[in-house]
Image (tube, rainbow, N blue to C red):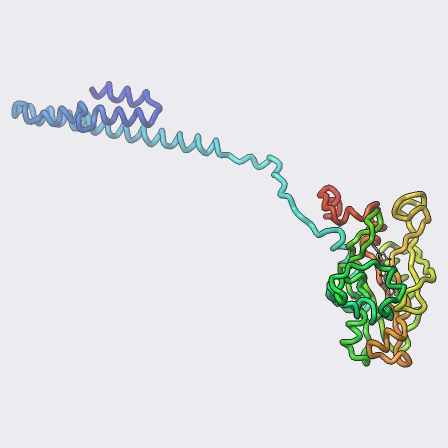
Length: 337
Ligand code: FA5
């Protein structure tokens, strides 16, 4: 019986089967248990002999089963570890990462540049009053120049601001006519423009305003030149063309030399080799006095630029609508800049 049991134990490689073997020999109805139970029926003198043998056989089988069980457990563990081995040489799965939008980045870059020249960054409301968007900027009701910016009106008096210039008037008001102002203001603006490659009905502007005693046109030109060279490179040129804005006198528009398409028939530079990126000028005396500044004492310059156009120029984006359609293939290109 012992030899038979040990042979079965040695042969098996399965823990379930081992359990079956254990039950067959050592279980309640197992053969060894049966022998031990039957001891009472044996003649007295045989009991110690048979008892000793039976106990010995039971111990051997128990020990063999325990050892086998341990071996099988060990094997199972090794197998499991093998199956779960991590191949550290496999390339990892990339985790998709987002990034700031190109427009956010260019606005931040321009902000940093002006902060470096001593400007503070301010904000103003996108839903604006007719007063600040137009009247405080020397554009009384029914002034023909209001047509320069086709406006989304909400009520008679409320509108979506068509430019960031109202923040000029708001800031000067806050400074109460007796402090120098040196600020920029980025933000969204809205116009009933027909969307095309260089126009959007909602776009971004960055306003700039510097008011102090003795601020001159040459200061404006100097700041804009530094701005253009820092943003686009030392080899870039600017040109100021006479223009008209009711809130500045004299007024200019600034073009920057266009290297993207070398002047030949591309939509960004319209084949001229120059692209307009901002309007500017010396703050009109009426605007200063409406905001509480004495134009005899204070002078100032202001500018308003379109960062989308600037980003288009800097990164060769040929359609402004790319900024708003959120095509990931477009956006991803700028995650690393
Ligand atoms: C203005 O809005 C003036 N407020 C700028 C200004 C400020 C002049 C302070 C003087 C003093 P303009 O309409 O030209 O000006 O717009 C300024 C810039 O916004 C343009 O140079 C252009 O870069 C951008 N821009 C204008 N219209 C659009 C549009 N529809 N889509 C995208 N960018 C535009």
